Length: 520
Image 1 (cartoon, rainbow, N blue to C red):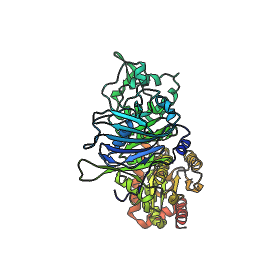
Image 2: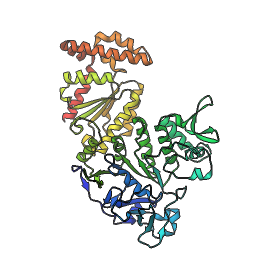
Image 3: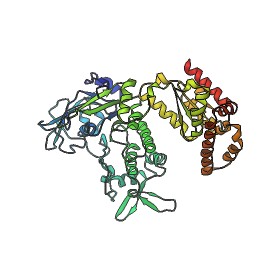
Image 4: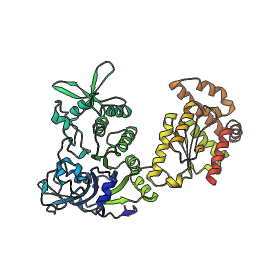
């Protein structure tokens, strides 16, 4: 990973300033690891509100999270590196007086916590070098600080008994999920509404506790009063529900999230990541991932840091290292490529044109641009595949250029052109409102309510017939019509050029305007 720019990190020089930035909330400000798992020794790693650790499998990403977890959950295995008498984890903390079990240290406020881990698994905690040992933070609300969410979080058995211990327990798996959902499912519980709304938005239904033999289990209620147990749903649903339950009611906590992408469809993952970003205004987030989607979403946040974790090839036992990824396009694009993000010379495209449907994208890309606006050959056309996806598609583009720090280079270098019906005009109006620093004309509609109106005149009857249908039949008819139009255009280029010059004149004029803007 030699091409990734490295920023050398040092211990923060002014914890008082960091505390001011954090408005007095507890915050992990820095970390250093020695003799722990695959790490021999790291330099100080500085943290922000959102922190993303990326890299190949088995590179050491999870070790970072589990090193932090020692302040609360203790040892999760034989984690002292071979040849070391003990492991040492140094953590720079801000606002220690907000941690109830350590409130006797409140006069100190901020400083360094030293965690010494023995091969037996015994961890000793000391603050600012004092001889007095501290107890790890309890795994129980409200005195916990860390919310663990590790990749091996699946549980084969949900505890069916609902009691106070189960409700307040903080666990790295979902064994106590039933009790937590029982509390969140109560409309009188202060965080019920937030949990229910996020469940509806992401899953389309609310997961709660349902009756079962000898107690309760997680599940959903059906409209007829029946129910479905959670373990009969996809693997991704428990992952989402477990995290939603914690995000909905946590304030001032530190979330350690390992591989949030596990078992999730990309759309569900994006919705979950948006929720994590919202929660980062009230909590601190540390994530490990090898997903380019997670890296792009969380790494584009304003208060975020991105780290690349790797191990020396051919070295056994492995030796891991951590590099902060520089905030420049080449370093961030390299990271995305290493994570499997496929795009053709993203940084060389002159601009981007986002269209509503495949029909518009194919006709514009394959015929109108090469025949009438050839200087747009270096513009990338994209189909949002429906008006509901237009805004999310542009937001994905915007998030990508922010992540890669190409925002200034690509400002006003993207256009959204969609159908001129009422929904299209509303979408354009909303995009203009949400992105006021972009020129308004970059969000626009065609004059026609349907792009098919610009097909050659020979197909006007077929266009009317297809648009007169509804639902699945309409979509199928439009696809078939597109293929007939393309075949007709390919059959005789001269005839096709002449026909489109007449029928698609408004579209051609708009493309030529974009052509002038790019060249200027």
